[in-house]
Image 1 (cartoon, one colour):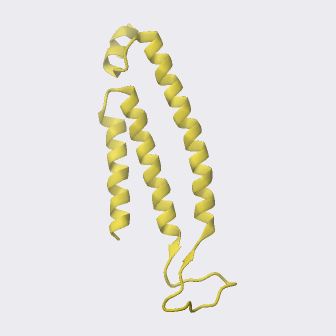
Image 2: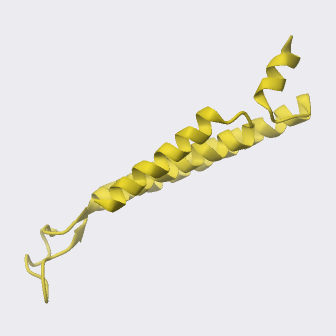
Image 3: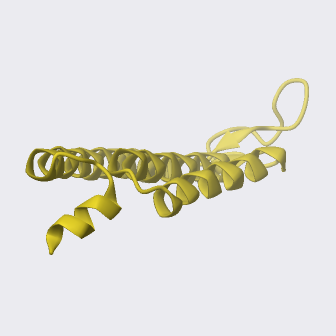
Length: 114
């Protein structure tokens, strides 16, 4: 239960960084942190304590059987690839904004826009 709460705290920290900060780089980092929190939550949900795969025996040696569902792991791998591509796009846009306006501050960019 503690791990789920820590994922929630990490997600809230990432959303706070994306919404409250005015620096483009900090916004990109906040979104990346929130994405990592969601991926971690998927991996944690996949872990089953009293379940087992159909091909494994129901009782493992020395205690309860442990199983990890492979489907969320496959989804997380796909999400990591998509997240990497979107993060690279956001960094490229941030670099282009800096080349155009000479700053990463959103409030200054809005003032320069006219």
